[in-house]
Amino acid sequence: MKYVLSVLSRSAGAQGHVRHIGDFDSLEDAVAGAKRVVDAVLERVYVSGMTATELVDQYRAQAEAPFIARDDEGTMNAGSFNHFQYARVRSEQICTGAG
Picture 1 (cartoon, rainbow, N blue to C red):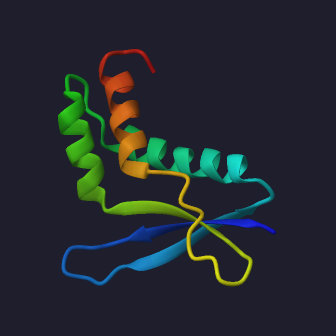
Picture 2: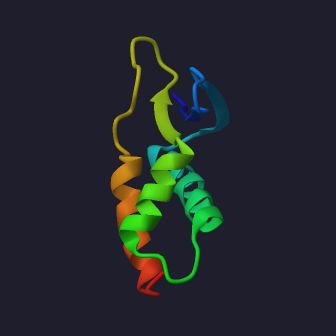
Picture 3: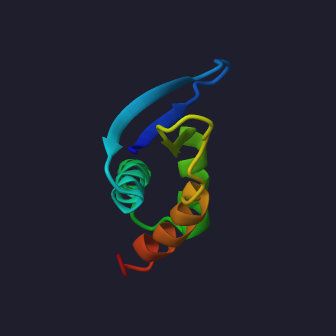
């Protein structure tokens, strides 16, 4: 069984599309990949002096949602990674200089 990491991206006024990021042998590796996706967005939109709330708002505005699915039949989502929760934690770390 593989874990498939994809990103759902939406553009303003568009339905969106799914971008395949990679296939992983373990859930832990897939979660690490999803965290890298979130980190890349946060790094791209961060401006010195931003509050964590502002950074999370900018993350949400980018409308990129990583999700992890298993490749076995009948499974839609592995459900073990909440990208918004992770973005909030990382935003706090980034904005306080702890990460």
